[in-house]
Length: 378
Image (cartoon, rainbow, N blue to C red; front, top):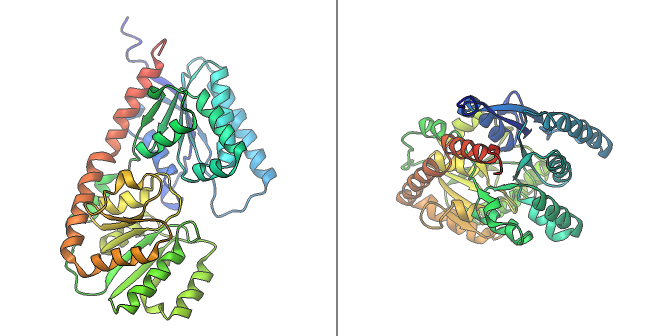
C-alpha cells in the first residue's frame, strides 16, 4: 500500500544540459541543470533530452532540422516508456517553439501529462507579426496540461492568446538563481565609492539588447560632466559598430569591453559595480537582472517582459521604456550622484530576490506540481 508513496515520478525533461554552465550564454541552461541536480532527484527519475544550442555557431536550416528530428525521435522513445508520466518541456522562440510543440503533441498522444515552459520574450514579438506563429502557439497551449509562466505578465499574455483554456492550467514560477552565491559574493556592497561610478552591462552586443541606447545615454552623461564608466560584458555582431560610434562621440574613456564573461568573472564584476543595467527591447524573465539585484547593486532596466514584475520603480530599482535613452540617462545620473539612493535600492532589490528567486522555492513548487500531475485523474 505504501510502496507507491516513495516511488519516484518519471519525468522526461527537454531543455539545456551543458556540462559547463559557466561557458554557456543565457539562463535556460542554468535553470535546467540546477533543477536536475537539486533535491528533486530524491523524488524524480529524470530522462534528459538535451537541446542546448551553441550560440557561437551559425547553423543551416538543414542541420537544425536534422538535429531537431533526432531529438524528437529520442523524446518519442523516452515518453512512450510506461514509467514516464510527465514531459517537462522548456522552449525558446522560432524553430525551438515548433520542435517543442511537436513534442508536446507526441506526449499527449501517448497519454502523458505535459508542462510547457516558454522562456523567451521574442515569442510575443513573433506571434504579433506572424499569424502562423500565433496559430501554432494557440495549438500548443491547447494541448499542454500546464503552461508554466515566468511571471504574472506572461501568464496574462498567454491567457489572452487562448482565453478558452482553464485559468488553473496557467501557473507562475519566477526564475530561480543561486541567490546565496551572489549575496555571499558581495555581502556588504560599498555604496560610498569616490572614484568613477562603475555601470555594468552583461549581455549580447546587438540591437535587441540596447547597446546603442547605452552609448547615447553615455553621450548625455558625458555632456553633464559626470564621472562614470560603462563596463560591457559579452560578445555579439554589433561590437565593431558600437566601438566606432564610441570613438566618434569621444567616449572611449567611459567604456571598457570585457568580452565573454564566465561566472567567476561575472561575480568579480558584480562585486566591483555600483549600478547594473538592462537595456533590452525584448526579454522573458532576465536572469542577469536578478543576479544584479541579488548582489545588492542598484539596477536600471527597460520595462520589457517580466521586468514590471521584478522592478517596482523608485523602490527596488528604476525603469524606463525601451529606446528612451534620455530617461535612461536621467535615471543613471540620479544614481551616480546619490549614494544613499544606490544603497536604498540595492538593499531592497536583494531582499526581493531572496524571497522570490531562490532555488529551493522553485524545487518546492516543481515537486508539488509533479505530484499533482502524477496522481491518477489529475
